[in-house]
Structures are given as structure tokens and as C-alpha cells.
Length: 302
Image (cartoon, rainbow, N blue to C red; front, side, top):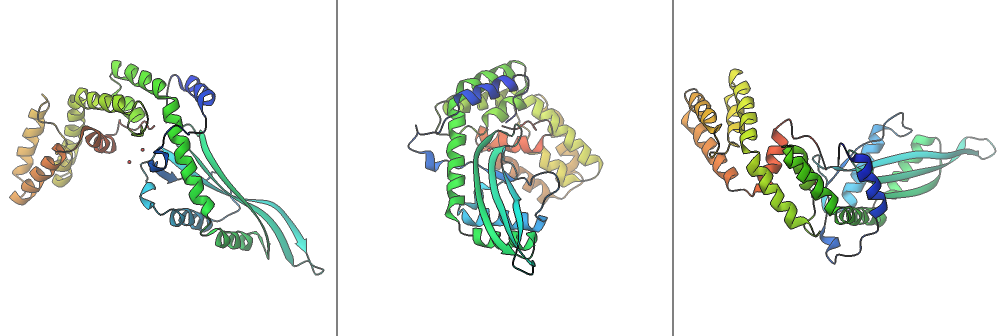
């Protein structure tokens, strides 16, 4: 969710407009995609314990397909020790107070949409054992599912509150031929919000206006793969080239050159993949292109 240039103004507006979303009856149908990012710096919990916490979150929520490495929304898990006291006359047992938290936020701007916190007071030999006990007791906690549902609602509210800002921003990007930025601001606009149809139309325009540039990028990648004699990879890139662009002549010549070095079945598979891609919606095509072309890296869902 990166708004270069006017990021500060945008975030200021976000703070002013942000509110708990209640205007859509279909709120519960919206599921954002999330990826997990462990907190930076030295941690009291081990990597294994963080992995355990992440697994608990995934297992608690039945729709596991909402977790994706391609998401602009992240869930940051935290485990911290609040206090540690020695108990008992022989002072060998410790009473440890710890907190387990989850934060749903933007990958790029760190804006927090929602938080979950749960405090545990546990008797254990040390902090590591206490954390492990807390994780066991956290399993099947329904509040984790509530946390994700509320996060979805907050993200939906964010887009509805900022529809006009997003549309104005992408129109400036398109005027500057900054298609990657424009697309990434629009690609995760939920279907429920009022500007979705207009956003969808702009995505189609972006796709049409960027065909020539995309072709050049893919041909460049395909040439590099062909030089390395990785013909399958070269054909993989070339399947995304639109036939109605000037650059297609170069792509076609490269396909012909590769065709002389591979068997007919490889070419038939290539034509089938190319046909399959051509039948996708403009939005889906742009999502695939965004993953494969290096310059499409600015992110505002998969």
C-alpha cells in the first residue's frame, strides 16, 4: 500500500477518515489475503515458537486460502515477557506473565488495521517453557478468528473511505505512464466498495495501454533465457505476449528460433498455454503479469 510522492498526505487523510466499517451488508463475505512477517530484532521466543503461533492462526481460521505470500497485508505475530518472578521457598519455580499478540497491517506503510492481544500468567521453569505452555492454551481460541474477521472489515472500510483518493492517484499515474503503480493501487480494491466498477475499468485501460511495454519486457526476459538455452523458460515468458502489438514481431521470431531447437510437443504445449492465458480476464492477466515482470513491484490483494 505504497503511495509515493503524496504518502504523508494520504496517511493523514487515512487517519481522518478511518472508522469502523458498518455500511455494507456483505462485509463478512470479504476476505483479504495476508502473509506473515516475524518482528525484527532480538526476540524472547524462538523461530520455532513463532512458526507454531503462525500455524495456530492458520488452523484456527478455516479459509486457509486467505494466507498468501503475494498479499500487501501482513499479520505480525509478537511474543513478549511482561514480568518474571520467582515463587516457592526454594525459589526454583517462576511465575511468568507474557503477552501474545497479532497485528494486521499494511506491508509497505505499516498502518495498523487491527490488533489481538492475550496475556497469560504461567508457572514454569523458564520463559521458553512458559511460552510453549501459552501457545498450547491458545489453540482453538475463537478470538483469533474474530481478529481476522475484524481485520477484513477494517481493510474494507479503508478502501471505501479512500476510494476518491485512490482513483485520483491512479489517474495521475496513468497520465505519467506509471502503469505498475496504478495497477497496484487498484488490484486489491474489494468488489463491495463503491469505486470497484470504476477501478475495474481503469485496470482494463492499464492493461491495454501497457501491452507494448509488457511485450518488450517479456521478449527481453525470453531472449535472456534463450541465450542460456533454457527454452522452456523462454517460451513461458512469450506466452504472455499479446498478438496485437508491434513488439509481437520480435516475439514471434524468437518463438520460431526456439521452435527449431525443441520438439513439437513443447511447441504445442506453448500454444495451449498461450490460448489459456488469452481467455483470462484483464484483471487476471494483469495479476499474472505483475508477478512476472520485475518493474511491477509497487504494492497496495492474490
